[in-house]
Image (cartoon, rainbow, N blue to C red):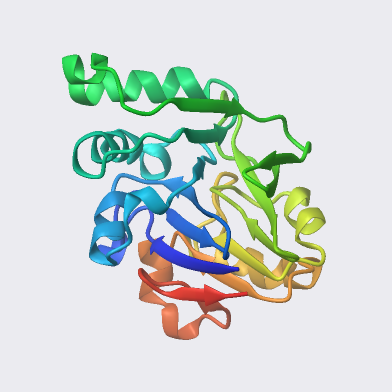
Length: 244
């Protein structure tokens, strides 16, 4: 398994970092975990064609995590014409939110027929799903009060990746991290505490409860970036590659 970090920043692009997006590849498939507003830019900078993406798994409907989908649609319609289906997985109301965003951003252009079908799969928490021979297990994390937000456990070619999405500390992180090869975990804050994002002191305190072999911090906010030399854990950066 090979993971390319397309964006390691928060919603504010702190430190000039891009929005959340992770390209996960093996010899037989390639897919995105989240598709923030800057994901297409990152793919082009790294000379990764959009047609390599078999499906996209969305953690939650915030712009820095799914706001790049309309750009990806247009790229796949006009610049790199696609014919095979594009599967998009995510929490409840996924299709409604994505289609509303597409219309809001591109108006009548969004009414034109695409050359490829979009297949929406709204997943159930704690239920594994096979998506293009990749085992995805979504689990609920605390981030929004009125909408379901997911983290994902991914199993591919005998390797396991955990992705937190955006969240505060919750028992699912400890549970689903057991035995994972790598855990890409959000870390927005260094000092501040909030129930909807993780902070560095929380992760220091809970590290022994995380059963992952490798912990990589991402979704880094300005507090974390200002204190990065003090952080004991590995931190992602835009364009870095994690070999698992």
